Image (cartoon, rainbow, N blue to C red; front, side, top):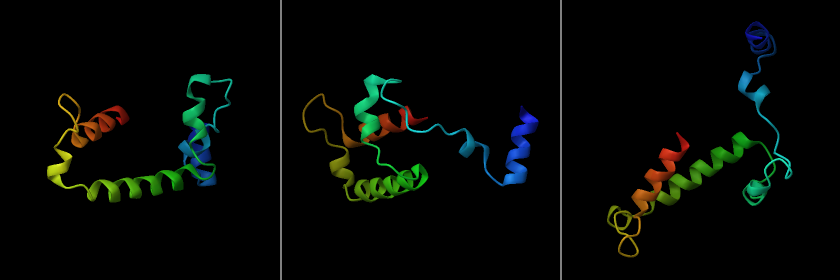
Length: 91
């Protein structure tokens, strides 16, 4: 299998991860995630994620350091803590 995978990448100039990417899951596969999956727009997922990254960086850059360190209520997370939690979850 490894040799075949290597050959596909080498001769077709298609990265293996692009070949192995699954299409959007059907609702019957993961009914508990239907809402989240439905929020992803149709299109090239690389382009969608790239645009999302740019928008996220722009938005987060607009928040002052002081605001990012404040929680909206006692015992609640700050913006910095939420972003750290998201980053940890994506690893």
